[in-house]
Each structure stands twice: as C-alpha cells, then as structure tokens.
Length: 436
Image (cartoon, rainbow, N blue to C red; front, side, top):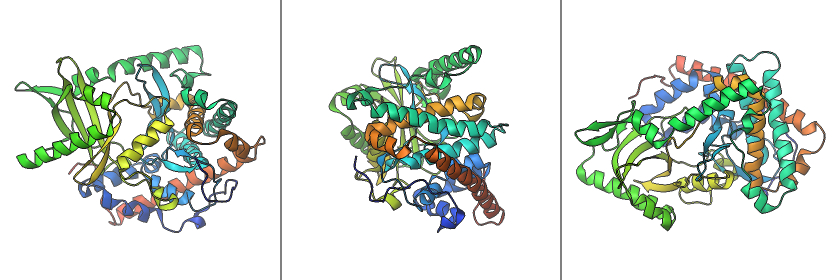
C-alpha cells in the first residue's frame, strides 16, 4: 500500500486549539444520513457517559486526528479501533479467533490514527470502570508494547506468513492466574455455544400460524407500511445486488435458503440512526436457520480528510477493509444497494463474542496487549511492517508521545461529552430513550 502525501512526523500532542469545528457541530453534520426518528435515541445514548460518547464520536476524533501532521505510513485502518471493537468470532473452519470486529469507518490511512483511538479508549474505559491505581496507565502502555513487539515480528516474516497468521482465543487471557484463565475460558466456551444461528433462533424466533417470525424488540417490520409492489421491488434489490457481490460458489449455498422474515434493528451507540435490517432465512433441509444482518454504510468519517474511497459502494468499502484486516472473514460478507442506500451484509451472532467493559476490567492490561498485537497484525497485512518499525524506533520516545496524546484526548472526550449534555439541556437537540 502506498504512503500518504504528508511529511513523516512524530506524534503531536493534542490541544483543543487544534480544533476548527466544535465537536457538537461534527455530530450534527451526520444527521443527514440517519433516520431522523432515531436521532433523539442516538443523543440519549451518547450523553449517558463519556465512554458511550467516545463510541459514538468517531467523526469528531477523525477531524481532530487530521488536524496535525501524521507519519505518512498507510495501512488499512479499522477507523474505529476502540478497545471493545475487538472480540472473538469463528473462522470458516469454526475456530474461535481474536480480531478487530467493526469496520464501518475503514479506509486507508496513517497507522498511528488507529493506535491513538485505541489507547484513548483504554483511558476512557478505565475511568468508566473506576479502575484504581495505575491500571489504566498500565493498559495504555500495554497496547503500545503489544503493537511494537508484534510489528517487529511481522517485519521479520514473509508476506504469506503475515497473511496466514492468526490470533487464537486464548491470547487475551495470557498472563492471568490459572484460576482466572479457566473461568474466562469456560465463559467463552459457553457463549460460543449459545451465540450460533440455532441459539439465536431459540431466542429470536416464534411460530406465527406456521410461519417463523423474528420477535426481538425493539424492532420494526421491514415491510411495514409498504405496498405489495414496493415489497417485491425492495426484496428483488436485496437479493440481486447482494448475490452479485459474492462469489459464484457461495451463490449456490445462499440459493438453498429462503427468506422467512425481516425486521429493522436498532443497534449500538454510534450506529443508532443508521438503517440495519435482520433477515431470517431457512435452509431447504428445514434444519438450518441463517441470520444475515444488512447494515447501512455511508462514507467513512475519514474520507473528508484522506480522500474518497476507491469503491463506488460503501458497503463494498467495508467488506474489502474487513477482509484486508481480518485473518479469516465471514464467508457471507457482501454488499448491496437498496433504494439508493448502500449496505454491507454479514452473519448475525455466528459464534461472535463481544466483550463488555465490566468483563475485561479485571484483566484490562492483558486484554489491551492482545488488542495491540491484533491491530499490528491487521496493519501488517496491508502496510509496510519494516517502515512502521523504523518509525516506532527503539527508544521510549514514540510511546511517551502517543500516551501523552491519548491522555489529553481522553480529557477532551470528557469535555466533549459535557458539551453534548449541556446542548441537550439547552434544547439544541432532543434526547429520548424511547424508540419512535
């Protein structure tokens, strides 16, 4: 991957004076691409805590990262590499792997931007979980250590060895006492058994006069208020555009499934307001349910500063970025366009284990080390490991500079969260927990 057109630079310390547009205005600028009925819910969730705010404010941080010089060393960025956007899921061979898991904002960009967001998130999460002592500082430093060590290893490896490298489910647990590791392993095994299509069907599906329907709330019917002609046209777009995006051999597999039901979901924090559909398909055998999630994809928040994506469909941008960064991607990954809106498609809950802050708080430095290592793997697949290692250097300068930036930006996140809370109190935007 080529380098960006910027002179190489060390990390510049964050200062609010670098900001040209206030954070609240950056958030409001995203309203146009979202369902207006869900904006009050988005603001309510972001205002609930600084950690929730950070998760929903990728656009704010993208602009702030772009306000200072960067390394010029290009990788496929995750774009939203906060610490809870790493987790476990199954490879096509059904092996649990640890990897980055959210690629809505993925785009080629400077490697250190992902690192800055990840380390900032460690500080904000440590504060949210009220971790005392030096736990937050230790975890932040562990990210850099994990990244540096892994990138040095990748710089010594051949291209195929880098591409085939995988990080297994036990890696985030290394360094724990045997008792803690065993308890975490048991929890992972239990979740991996329930987070399957069959497990999801038990929780989400009910029989409605002989037809299987999705019942999880809050959801809306995909065809609510649509005429029969509109339904037919929408479903045709879904299948035609999705099938065109996947390999021919996979079309055979998908052709053995028939759609039983579709509902609209409301997910996450940063994704609230984006259109997300959950489709239930059933195999011809009558024994195999399949849940596919189609999520709206808009322009990455980094495109304003790094240039537009090379892909005409933003769903394709997400899919290609995910395949570039992950060791083993979901076989059903694809993209579609329905009524002019881009989407990417993936399996829903296919042995996916998404961590919660309270779960990893007890071993945050170990988990942070694994995240740093995983991010290095993802970057090494698309970037130049040797050039990145050279930029990192052998001394402590890079680590000290990036930690100083992240500490300052964590403080900025708290200030931006307070600004949003004040804006809601002043009536500038409406915040409500209910669903319209």
